[in-house]
Length: 293
Ligand SMILES: CCCCCCCCCCC/C=C/C(=O)SCCNC(=O)CCNC(=O)[C@H](O)C(C)(C)COP(=O)(O)OP(=O)(O)OC[C@H]1O[C@@H](n2cnc3c(N)ncnc32)[C@H](O)[C@@H]1OP(=O)(O)O
Ligand SMILES: NC(=O)C1=CN([C@@H]2O[C@H](COP(=O)(O)OP(=O)(O)OC[C@H]3O[C@@H](n4cnc5c(N)ncnc54)[C@H](OP(=O)(O)O)[C@@H]3O)[C@@H](O)[C@H]2O)C=CC1
Image (cartoon, rainbow, N blue to C red; front, side):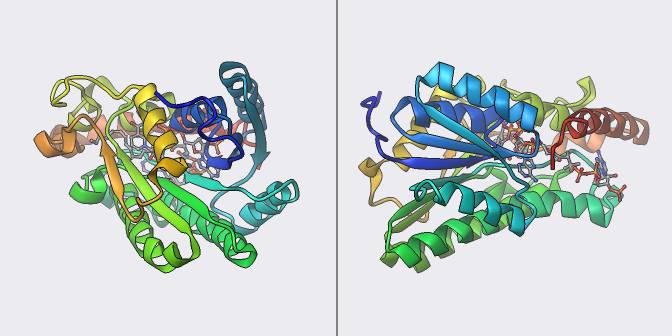
């Protein structure tokens, strides 16, 4: 769809690019000439991802260990990247989420999600923005949101709140930083099945409701990674240099037509919720064992 060199000379960081949607975006950027950087908290996962991105794209990729919840960790990562040259683009993709009845959430549970999604996107955007502004360079920021920024969603309230905050950041920074040549946009995907999201959001047969099902999507299917890559390459390219402050949905029309949220989980019993929590926490434990930071 695009010229293979459409992103030649671009240097793009994808947070959370070691897995899922972030890794797929990174492949798309690198295959179109960009040097991509990915970050996350698990060295082994990042090393494997870099090898895969290089092989699939035949392009340039590097990884850094960083925790987006920690502003010092983000600063250290940006300094390391800038030592080789400035980034031209940032994708705020790192995310955290799990299904839970809101009344069961502890302050730490809420904080884990809010700080990853909202604080992480803010810290990374400011770390890039201040460097671009100081050097008089243009830049592009794209945040990976979800259609709940328009609809909200039951049972994932901290994630819906945090994504909505980043939606507000997108519109606000587009205006503040537009005169400095920095474009700020976002995407709002519908369901693109990934291991990370499905383990936390569809852990049991009983939790398969609206948000994670394809049958009520007007286009009657899940999103394809190629479709996601095409949108990201376009938004990151100089071909759309008049688009800023927008959040573009890529959900097959789901949020306009059907309950693309977890409203259907009202049917779950306390025992179902307990089993869901145990399944989610087993997935988190497995990931934590390999965290490097
Ligand atoms: C058209 C719309 C269609 C929608 C499409 C559907 C699907 C897409 C939805 C898209 C929205 C966003 C999705 C995502 O972000 S998916 C990404 C999923 N990946 C991840 O979450 C990876 C990162 N995750 C984590 O790091 C962990 O999961 C965690 C968030 C838990 C944070 O880890 P941390 O190490 O900080 O956390 P702890 O294990 O110490 O736990 C912190 C507190 O959280 C409590 N907790 C954990 N699990 C549960 C649970 N299931 N229920 C309630 N509480 C939970 C835990 O007990 C800790 O609190 P306390 O210390 O007070 O006990
Ligand atoms: N899959 C879907 O259908 C949809 C996904 N999205 C969004 O897409 C994004 C990616 O989700 P997906 O690929 O499905 O899920 P994944 O779980 O595969 O991706 C989450 C990534 O974020 C990284 N991450 C989490 N916490 C931190 C942290 N504190 N510091 C650095 N990196 C972190 C994880 O790496 P590590 O644990 O190693 O740090 C992981 O690579 C999320 O923002 C999600 O909200 C939006 C709509 C739909």
